[in-house]
Image (cartoon, rainbow, N blue to C red; front, side):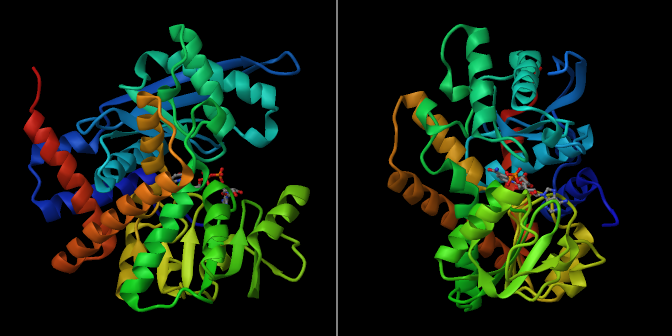
Length: 416
Ligand code: NAD
């Protein structure tokens, strides 16, 4: 798909828009435009064939005026400092919108996990953590999973950090397996949050979820679980996709069965009874609800005009460019922006951190109940502001997030 933007230009344009709307002090705007700290490391490991592997690693800490840095770690061949910087900036606004006591960060390594053995991934993760450990910690910066990292990766991060400090520190990372201090409900949390936002939006639009056609781009943690949860809420999942391509079936797909097929064949494509489509086709497919849950820059000025959905819920970070935002808004499509829609993940990460710090373990019911409260509050805060400002939901969410961070920055002042 032609790239009209990078993630960073999108994030910077969004901040500019919010700054203008908020009449933000120029100095504060200049501060928020840049991250507080960017760390670049060379991650060197022994490969299985005894050669040496060298990978570029990053950790960007945007701003921490509301609390310790928090953000995922991404393993993808296209990871760059610019992309990680944009993702860190979005984390800052997201935590503020969700009302969490965190700042925003993001990390990543430019690598192709499909070409690395589990042993190589483990050595790469541990080496990466050892290189940035001085800047991590439960009260400094707490990593979590993102694209092509998972609970196992988080377990290696926790173990490496704990070994370096000499004692077990489960609160140093979130998204861990439950057996070593992870939270119930964390794996599905992002998708649960996306689904709660869709439920709220549908209610506002007077739209029935029963039988509503849903297309989901990306079939990983966020995409698969969103499809499953929406399926269990009686929606009809008509299209799903992964990095290889997608499938479309107007009669509806069972996400679990598609996953069994993907586990066998490495792709959703070729699923019996469905038609193979491209990722581009999925975006413009006939559906009521579209959930982009893969990567950035998927809804652009080229395809936004052809979107048929009434609701777009951004499971992914940064899937829509500013030009596409405008086109979707003009078409009357309700777009639930990433910094609101996918904030369920960091919200349950926050619950995990609180449980670790207090040595408590909450039940799934407790976690989901607290998540629902936080998500519906965040959704309604943004919805009300968008009505007051007569703006789209993205502008309102940015105003809320950037406004809270800017206020905290001003109150704390600059030292020295
Ligand atoms: P994941 O690695 O579990 O899954 C990624 C999925 O995207 C895979 O199915 C992969 O095949 C697919 N994919 C990769 N390249 C693609 C392409 N070019 N076109 C279509 N599909 C492609 O990752 P995830 O954790 O599900 O993250 C997905 C998105 O959600 C990312 O934008 C991430 O930042 C965001 N997000 C994740 C979380 C979380 O808790 N995991 C929280 C908030 C936001």
